[in-house]
Length: 115
Image 1 (tube, rainbow, N blue to C red):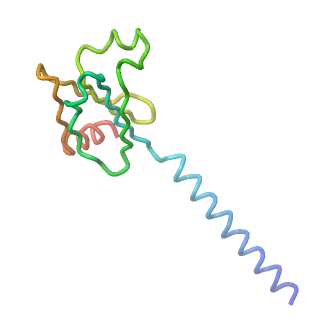
Image 2: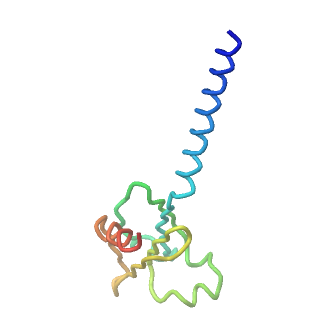
Image 3: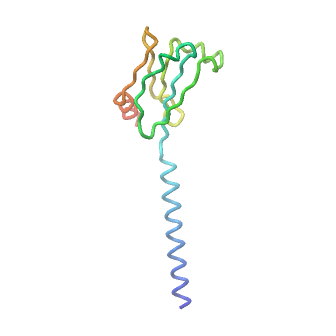
């Protein structure tokens, strides 16, 4: 009876360790995508039209709240920047009308090109 209980404990412990290993491996190899839209408060009516994509986090920031050095780099708003694990992999800029439209296909293409 004791050997049966000991065997059962060993199997349970192995299963738990296997689950922990799988969980850690999935987190280590998971890639995080973030799509950041930067717009100006005066241009809110022209917010970017961006298709929502599963597993791509969407964030909005206002140009007025950024550092002066960062604001100098932005030539037009809105702008959208796609990051993969905190590295910029794609960028879309508004046209002369201050409008920006990004389709699901464009985002998925950028992701595929940077896998």
